[in-house]
Image (cartoon, rainbow, N blue to C red; front, side, top):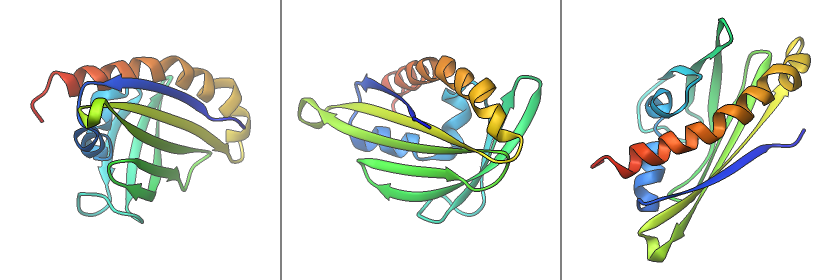
Length: 149
């Protein structure tokens, strides 16, 4: 399958963007389908950390355990779903702009379908993500550009 990828420029330093976006507790603030994101252990997350992310998919709430596969502050990260019928694979990259005063954030999301998830991914999950991702990036941009954090 091919990943869904989108980029957005944000008027914040890469370090600020990275700190916010890799803290899973912020996920429900900027992604509409994310109901909760609960770390299984201490923050900040590190390679090997797991987070239970619950998403609203239609009328159902679907929890997925995400594992931190890679962290390269303030440049990139990789989280991967390790259970459930739909396992997201999320990669992010931050490119510094204007001497490091701004950031270009690129998110790439793909999915592994297991069991019934094989049919669910192309029929429901990917269309939902394609629709939600631009809104999520705009919310992320707004939150980061209008907060003091």
